[in-house]
Image (cartoon, rainbow, N blue to C red):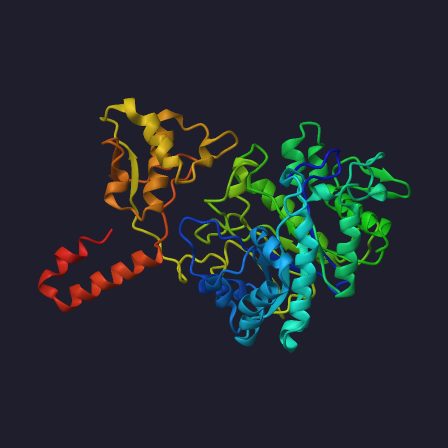
Length: 501
């Protein structure tokens, strides 16, 4: 994600459809950069229980896509950037990818709606690496979809774009929206191909990143409370970055001959950790007002009417790259173990959303057990933690912390994190425990040259939570085997069961 200069917005991801949505719609993005992955079937059950009818993935992992069998949830699967050259060069490769990742699952009753072609392939920092392959890959995938059976022909292809495909204009107002000169010709070709197939055009909207990367960005303009001084653009007035960004894209599309191409926000959200403004309070404030705005159905100054959005993200991802910032691992509405971090009400007052899997109110609520996977199909490890041994020689603490944090997520210790002020010993304990938990509490993973010790006393300090990990599939299988053996040989049951972590 890269910064868009000016004060309108930074880094968007929007999905554009060739016809307007007839009613408001809200979906979620589900990424899987996690040290211990949740059971995909449990996640799908949770989504269905909460009436979420649209999910966007960032790949086509068989374990995840297969979990949507017999679900009414509309799914987006993705072709990775690394495959753009192959698929763009060889129509046969596109046909093979569609057979393996789309047609196969549709025949198994997976409700695939979109295929995302790459991810932000025109990003400036890629220096054109994918630019010559993206349009051919789109055409080849579209042809492969069109040449499939009836279910496959209904699937639409789209290209996720970073905000930097939009130009820095003077004046910096939505009505001046235009595409970058070096990609404008490609955008015309792509938009024409998408419109020809009634497919979406995709781009990311991240007001948080504008705030985080620009010290002069007006904070209140990032939220949808209407508290910021308005941005005046002729006879239109904008009170928030979201509406301004949305209409900037609408103007850019109109400028290249597609004034009626509808816009669907494919990725938008707010993180809860890793920056002073990345807090659960701010995330709840942003996301709730965004949801309220979408469900109101009013649209934007340039585009009145219902909108479709995909919240980013469903879950925290503790292994996600953090080059863009420590907050990258903390966009989830839910923690990585499926527990709700704050209340998010997706209820339509007096009605329902157009989510295809819901005929009742949506509610992402921390008080609703179905949303928090804990106690449903997620099993936590025992209540024990790895901490710094106060009697140990601390001369090796630094290198052991560095080792632990090279595998585990230590971003809460960094600037803007919830554990940033717990002191040196606390920092070591947090790092050791994070490593201990992702290694399924194996005893040797708390050694650290004799610096670590296991405790059953929760070392959490105020808002700094020392988390307990969740059981991996391998741990669950191991425990089931040990328990079964203990039942067969009851004489040794106490010795066997005490070996459980």
